[in-house]
Each structure stands twice: as C-alpha cells, then as structure tokens.
Amino acid sequence: MNIQQNKDLTDFNTFRVKVTADYFVEVTTEEELEDALDFSFTKNIPYQILGGGSNILFVKDFQGVIIHINNKGILWGEHADDERIKVNVAAGEDWHNFVILCLSKNLYGLENLALIPGTVGGAPIQNIGAYGVEVKDLIESVRVFDVLEKTWLKLLSQECAFNYRSSLFRGSNRYVVFSVLFELGRKWEPKLSHKELSDKFRCKKIEPLDVFEEVCRIRTAKLPDPTVDGNAGSFFKNPFVPVSELNRLSSEFPEIPFYNTNDPNTVKIPAAWLLDNLGWKGKNLGSAVVSSNHALVIVNQGNASGEQIYDLAREMSLSVFDKYGITLAPEVKIIDS
Ligand code: EPU
Image (tube, rainbow, N blue to C red):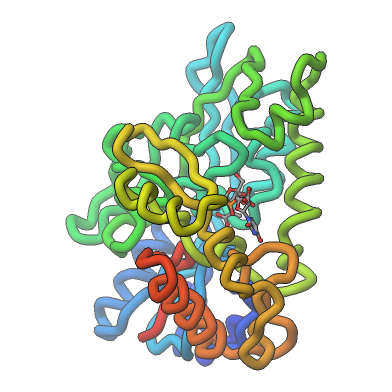
C-alpha cells in the first residue's frame, strides 16, 4: 500500500479547490481497500472515500486519509438472454466512457445519463439522474465492503434505499461501493418523458445515438464543463414540497414551475428557478460565482476556497428560505472536518 502524505487534492475534486489531505491512498483491489481502512482505524483518523470527486466540496484541509477508489474492469454478459444483459463494472471506471461503451455494444438504458461527470461507483451513491432516468432502474445489485461488520456484501437494488439523489450509501461511511452490476436492455425503449427530449423528438423516428447526442448537446449548452471551470453540477437538490405549500406559493408567485412526483400530495420545485428569481445568476463571493447559465451551479472561476463556495451556497439557501420559506438541501457532499 502506497500512502502519500500531505497530498494536494486540487486534481481530485471537480471544484478544483486547493486543499490537502494528511494521507492519501489509491486503491485498485479489495485487499488494498481493506488495508487502507485498517490504516485509518489503527491511526484513529477519519477516512473519506473518493471517486471522481465530482460531487464533493472540501471546505478545508482533510485531517485523515483519503481513499481514492481506482479499480478498473468491465465484465460484459453475465447471465445474458435475448432481452437483457448484466454488466459488472468496477467502481473506478469513468461513468461517461461506460455510457459510450454500452452504446457501441448496442446495450441500452443509460443514454439519457450521458456526460454526467464522475465514476461508476458514484452513480448508485447519489442515484444519479437526468432527463427522465434514474440509475437505480438500471442497477441489479451493488458490491460493497461493510466497514462495520468487516465483510463484503452484494446488496440488491431493493436493499439500497434508492431515492431522489440518495441511497443507503449517502450520508454514511459504512458501505464502500466497489462494483456495480447493471442490467441493460438489448432492445431500445426510448425514455422521452423529459420535456426537452419530447419537444425535440416528438413524432420523429430516432435512434439511441440521437438521444445520447441530444443529452450531450443540452448539457454542454447549460452546464459549465468541469474540466474548464471547476464545479460540481447542481449544488442543491430540488426541494419536495406539499401541494398545500405549492398553492400558497402559487398565489404569490403565479409563474412558479413544479413537477409531479410519485406522491400525489407532494410536488418538486426547481431550485434553479427559486434562485434565478432571486437574481443569483452571476453573483459571486470572491472567485466563487453562480453560473450565469444556470442558477443551481456554483463555479470556481480561479482560486476560490472551499469556504468561499460554502459561504456563497449558504447565502443562496438563506435567501431562498427568507423569500419562499423553503429549505434547500445540498446535493453536493460537504466535507468540513
Ligand atoms: N431554471 C431557471 N433558471 C435557471 C435554470 C433553470 O429558472 O438558471 C428553471 C427552468 O424553469 C427549468 C427548471 O428550472 O425548466 C429546471 O431546470 P433544468 O432542466 O436545468 O433541471 P434542474 O432541475 O435544475 C435537474 C438535475 C440535473 C439534471 C437535470 C436534467 C437536480 C438537483 N438536478 O436539474 O442534474 O441534469 O435536472 O434532468 O436534480 C446534477 O445532479 O448535478 C445535475 C446537473
């Protein structure tokens, strides 16, 4: 096990915040993961699992060990039949590359999730979703190390407590995701419920590649490229509010948009609209800037510190609470110890 000390994490978080970790270990095998965790227990220091670093904000230097999951490998075709195929993917594989590989092998289901930054391991953790698809619907099971019981487990999708941008793995360090078993389709079933896709493709004969390319086009137009301007996508989740609350808000803000949810008594309101309506686009705190294209995205336009990004986000959520009485929860995982 190669333990690096005082490691600069700038290249390991897509906000490109310049912080250090006391210790840093790159893990490519199950044994290495167990050794890295043992190191943290023996030294009695905290550990933080890191994949692509695309959904994390380090508010300050990390006084513990960063365990960077970098295992590789894709096993195609476990338990294949005419309709579906299972694909086992190491957590350290790049998400977007995996989506492209699936398309090249005529395996479908993930095309709406193109261009999401991060690794395959991050996908179940926050149940990534975009353009009418959530990854939970394509996952059969997740292989994890249970840190508490010190044992390897295969958790079926139903056991992962998947929900909007959340799962059993979010918010607790107990389970470390090491590989994901996907179940993909051999026959394409287009998912065009999202308005931007249905508007574009209504009554047209289309191929999976058309959807993939359109999703890439929309994302590129709307969201800043993290390889150019440091960011972590949506900073906040879209809030769920009771219909009674929506009625109250609609009387004051008649143009407020909302989406129905599985629960008839609850709707989801776009946080971006709430922030945009408060004039947040383009506002800044030092080099931490609210994107002028999308009010839900905070961009590091230079050398913003984690604290600046965090303080800007706090001001944004406070202003939303003051004006609408709605609490915004961060989508990004905040590490401040
Ligand atoms: N809007 C504004 N101002 C803006 C941007 C959006 O008013 O600056 C309003 C518009 O009414 C728009 C609505 O907000 O119709 C929704 O905006 P958008 O379609 O961009 O989607 P979103 O709800 O902001 C969510 C996900 C994205 C995902 C898109 C597409 C969350 C937190 N974010 O964003 O995921 O790509 O839908 O499905 O659920 C991410 O998680 O990092 C992410 C980018």
